[in-house]
Length: 143
Image 1 (cartoon, rainbow, N blue to C red):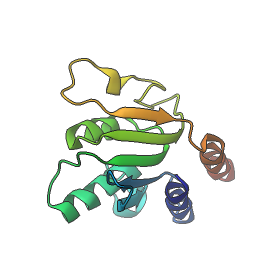
Image 2: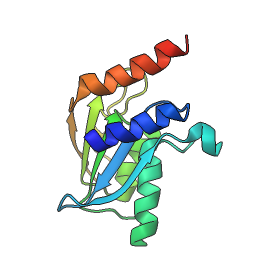
Image 3: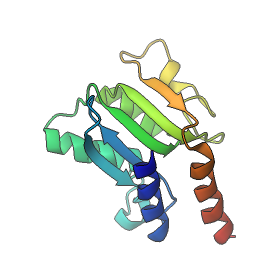
Image 4: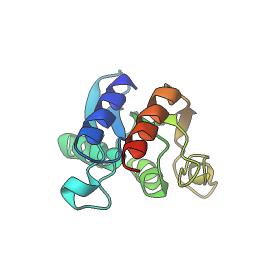
């Protein structure tokens, strides 16, 4: 999660919403990392999670990322949660909840839907205060 926080800090420095993600394999080796790049890439799908998943899938030449764990500083939105399911990511570990658009229990419980063909194990609250503090500081500076 510390590496995901470093990615979030990079996003903030670039003027992006400070969210960072790191994807590791089942042995803990880093496969990819990403930070929010929506503004810099002019791409509404360039959330930190999606960026990391794309990098890993291209490197592995496979969209299925079975056995992996995604560490992300903020609870994923519905788009990112859906991508985790499609990529067959095994575990999601996130920092702070997103009560407005979070899809892992904050606003929605997308990952718990019984009709899904893949289940993502979820752990939350890891370095939650550090993750939330970075977001609060970023948005306070813009008001």
